[in-house]
Picture 1: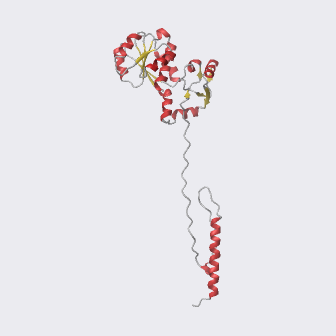
Picture 2: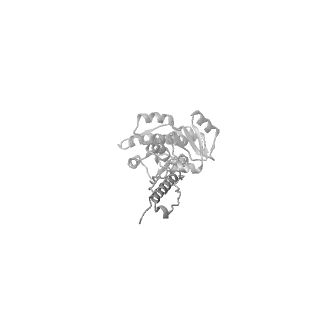
Picture 3: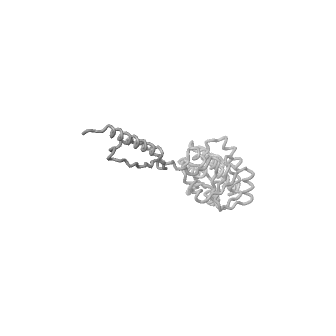
Amino acid sequence: MNINPNDISTIETIVRTIAGEVQRARGSAPIFAGGKTFEKRVSVPVSAAGPVPVPVQAQAPAQTAPTPAPGKKLRPEDLLLDKQVVTLRDVEHLPRAVKKLIVPQTALLTPSARDELSEQNIRLARYSAEAIAELSEAPASNAQAQANRVRMGSIEVYAVFTPYNPESLFPLWTRCGWHPNMRSGFICFDRTRESMAKNQTLNVLFTSKVDEALVKLNREPKISAISSTSPERLVKQWKDFSSVNTLVVNPSEIGIYLAGQIVMRAAELYYL
């Protein structure tokens, strides 16, 4: 079969033209969010030139899914108070580290509570029920976990030789984020001491015989007990006894309400 040189030259020209069009079409193809390109199809006259080798275009690298934004978390200076009525009693003895108090959107604050927050330079923030639930359930880092222990601490409560029932304070402590547990059935300090030595939480003893209780409880190496008559005095005592894990209060002397405030202050110092 004789091939005309003019036909060969014509075929080469057609091939070069088609190859150039393919390259230009690939270079100007639009790129979509999925990482794929739209390829323009070029019709090739098979009878004239036959199949034209087309360079394979490199695929776009696979895109990793975006990391979801982490949920809201309490900062060390935040304190969550999930209750509908906030009074002066709830805010007058807050830790010094607290800079923002978070309450529900529908919470009511008494004027005296607002004045106390203003005096302590504590900012008030109102969160929706969903946001508060998210804060309560969100995982926390080590530093935040230390801050959140204020809301999550347990209090083992005992009452020996006293006419007062500590359970009357449980609703207030619960609203402030504590978990009180009443230990009943103890009629002497020796049995109370044995029970306290097994606990890994804060122990609180209500009694009218404070001196005798302190002597008996501190005989146990695992117990370091102190007594106090005010939240302010308790803070000073706590600095001198860093290993304190037991608080003894006498509601007959200071009243049941002040005894409850001292317990909450002790819980803050213990769990922070």
